[in-house]
Image (cartoon, rainbow, N blue to C red; front, side, top):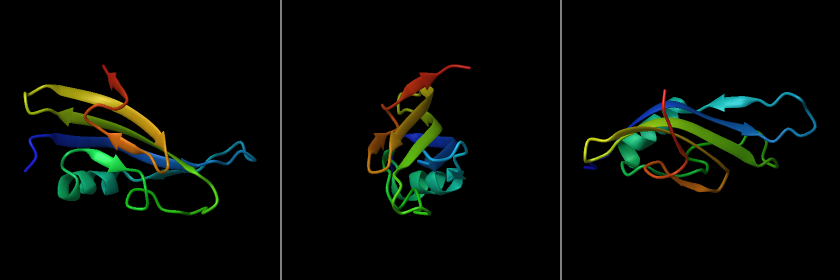
Length: 100
C-alpha cells in the first residue's frame, strides 16, 4: 500500500472549441479520486480514456486538477496541475503548490 494519500478537490477536462466563445467543461473529480484510491496509489496519472471521455473525438482535450497530497514524511501540499490529453502527470511533483 502506498504511503501517499490524495484528496481531489476538482478535476475537469474541456475540449478545444476555438470556433466558439464557450467551452464545455466536464467534471471528472469522482472518477479521478476513485482511480487514485483503487488503481493508482502512487499518483501518476496518464490522461487518457481512463480519465477523460471522448465527446468530440477530433478535438484534443485539456485536463486540470486541484489535489492535496499527503507525503510519507507528513508534509501536506495542495497542487494545481494541468496538461493536454495524452500527457502523464505525477501529482506528487507536477504543477504548482497552492497556498490559501
